[in-house]
Amino acid sequence: MKRFFFTLQIALWLVFTSVFAQNALIQRVNPTNWWIGMKNPNLQLLVYGPNAGTLAYSLNYPGVKLVKAHTVENPNYAFLDLVIAPTAKPGKIAIVGKHGNQTLTQSFELKARDASPKGQGVTSADFIYLAMPDRFANGDPGNDKFADMADPNADRTNPFYRHGGDLAGAAQRLNYLKDLGVTAVWFTPVLENNQPLTNEGGVMRSAYHGYGFTDHYAVDRRLGGNDAYKAFVRQAHAAGMKVVQDAVYNHCGINHWFIKDMPSKDWLHQWPAYTNTSYKYQPITDPHGAESDRKVTLDGWFVPFLPDLNQRNPFVANFLIQHAIWSVENFGVDAWRIDTYMYNDQPFMNRCNQALLTEYPKIHIFGESWVNNVVDQAYYTRNKIEFPFKSNQPGGLDFVVYAAMNDALKQKFSWDDGVNRFYQALAQDAVYVDPGKLVTFLDNHDTDRYLSVIGDDFEKYKIGLTWLLTTRGIPSMYYGTEILMKNFKDPSDAEVRRDFPGGFPGDKDNKFETAGRTDRENEAYQFVRRLATYRRDNPVLHRGKLMQFLPQEGTYVYFRYDGTKTVMVATNTNEKEILLDTTRFIERMKGFTSARDILTDQKLTDLKNIKLPAKTAMVLELMN
Image (cartoon, rainbow, N blue to C red; front, side):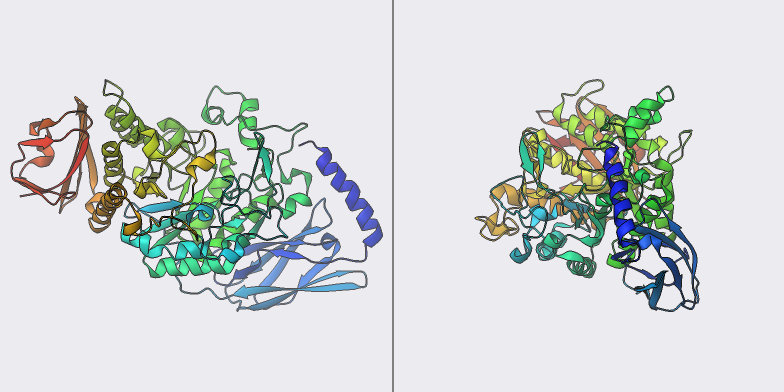
């Protein structure tokens, strides 16, 4: 994307303003509303419309003061700084704009905050279920497509088009999720993606994934819109579940309304010629790195159709921060997952994180920084390393443990390989302020599916799920893993984003129901359910300490324990049964004489030697 993109805009503005200088119009104000009683009294309104920036603004509302009106290069924008006093009452503010003989009045509503739950956070007591709304369940076929949108297609026979899943369909499946033991639902982004089809590798693809926002203040109509999202959150809360919103700060969609008519040339990171990010994370933390490499990583565009936002522009920063707060307050979401976290300006991220935490002290924030080592992962969360920059992000997606758990099940046991990979990843937890706030996972919407990675091996499948639901951190599971959905990203991401069987009208099988699943699928579902509900009901697995022992001969043992309970997780990754001598675990097993296998309900009366079948992880609740 070349700089002429913005130069052409300037020429058009000059023509437009010379002809219509006396005719201003306000078409949009963002945020669309605000609330009294927020901890931060400051609010910056983005006002947009033809010549909106040529107006002189004023307002007269008790407790609200217009401190400053900013103009920018594009005369179609004004930015109004307001201060809202604690004494302000709910109501509609009349914002008056004047230019010559023309007077415009725009209404802006201040609402009262309600007492509904919001910003509750997710913790290690939770079990997150990640789903892609378009591929999960279709509750309203009437909103599958709209002729007036840039992508008017919906076709389930095409893996790259929208399929029609929506929030109403997801709401209808809340009982299924609750029965499974899920306590929090995380959707890939629900905001409007009014993006045209893009040609990627010769294939026309839609933005069904949701990562190309075109209007921050509108939930996509094809998912049901703002009201459907509010309804889903209310229903989830009523069912005892929390909701995680997927946020994107780094970029937006090429079809975003403010990209079509940018406020200023520095609204985006622009280059003399199109420059893609290198996707290399090392230059950000490398003490020997080149600044030019760092700039390409951070300011290069993710892909050509996702323009890179310049968060060092104060108006961009305020827009994104206020939208984050508005989303939590308006929809009532509980946690905040941040896409492409490491590509953002990190001082901006600290500012945004703090703004959310100030308003919602319990909210949890965890970003995606896809790195392969503990040091780089720690950089993007609260850590104990003397980095020049200190992140304030409470959590993060644990890509290091993700890779380690998968490797542990793929590799043969050796000095550094096999289950040693998992052990070694956790052995480095000292770099984090609180490793329990990292979100652990076995796969997600951007990776090969877990079952395929481990060779479609059901016994290994059970080992990995056991680790996920008994080790430290906040476990997250990708939709369909509980019914053995599988596939690889090659030849496309669509292969790991297939529709959940039974979520769509006309599906042959309904795997939301026991009768629609095969015996093996039901076994998998019940396995996840048993572990998830045990974790939910036993604080030792989310608040208890973790002690792990060096893996030996393909076995790996760790304990979760607190003042009231001790749970032993013993894994045999070998192809043959092993009799595990427990003598070396005495510091955690002393005084215990028996155990209950929580996966089978069988009682073990002799703990001196434990028989571990081949490729098995046992979860034992120790008893005196």
